[in-house]
Picture 1: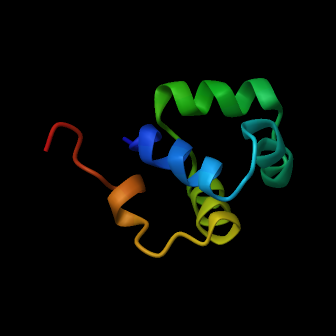
Picture 2: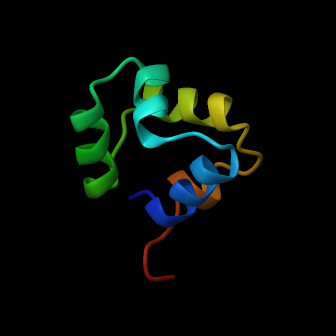
Picture 3: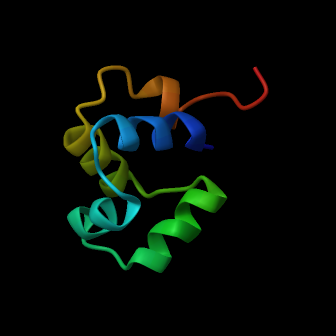
Length: 68
């Protein structure tokens, strides 16, 4: 599962909207919102998010143990 709160913080930090990020990923806005709600992205999307948002430590967000 993805720590969506951290991901949302990074999106805001970079001055992007979820709509703009969905467009950057090449997916529909509604699909992006569903993926955020479920906390699940495929590996290509995770890689793109890391690049777009310049995430230095992706494991904190994308490979986090929820509840730990």
